Amino acid sequence: MAADVERGMSASGAPAASARTAQASKRARRLPPRERDCVAGEPRGVVCPVGTTGRVEARRWGIGLVMMMARAATGAHLHLERPAGETVSDRFLPRDEYFMRLALREAEHALEHEDVPIGAVAVRAGEVVGAGHNERELRQDPTAHAELLALREAARAVGSWRVLDTVLYVTLEPCAMCAGAIVLARVPRVVYGASDPKAGAAGSVLDVLGERRLNHRPEVAGGLLAEECGALLSEFFASRR
Image 1: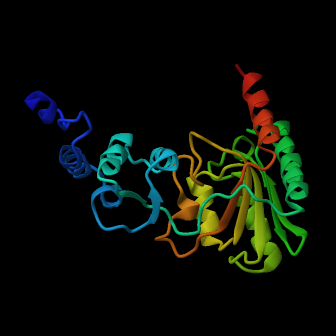
Image 2 (image 1 turned 30 degrees about the vertical axis):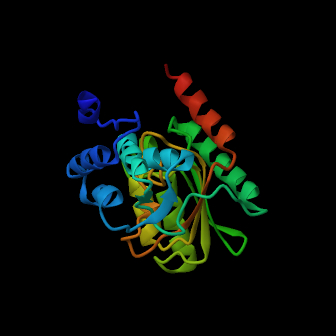
């Protein structure tokens, strides 16, 4: 029985809350400040009851499953560092698909100069004010991403670097550079197609678009025509293997 207590088990065989809490506190001290507050400090984000949803959110936001289970042992709630009201939505507006198909058409133009097929269009008041596709290879320019080219064209069209009252449609989840440009341009809404698990900055790797410490956070809806957007990319890379 003494050995069980040392391993964090009570006499009844259930986890000892004090042992689990001590382990969580020790591990929490090794986390970065933002994640540490989610586990062992005052709540600064939204609150989720620990359970199935808690496990999914814990993985998504970088909090270890062990930490979550330690909190569960005390019957507590898991505090997740997420910008309130700024989650990636899968809800789309009636004309979103139409404009995403225009972005897909832009992406296909990138194939003409052997660039990765990613396309973007900026829409204001139902009209396209900017469009672009990936031109890194064509221009030999590391910043020539579809989103940046579309935003530059949109800024010229509206006569301001603040591209207000627009929706940016892009076939692939924006990278950190493009997400930063979206924030700086004050774009109010972003709709993307396929997720990017290696470089996405709308929640996959980073969440620049949902970072609450920045002075602008657009509404984000992801996954529109994701299969078609992803297939275009998969076919491109498959042809080069």
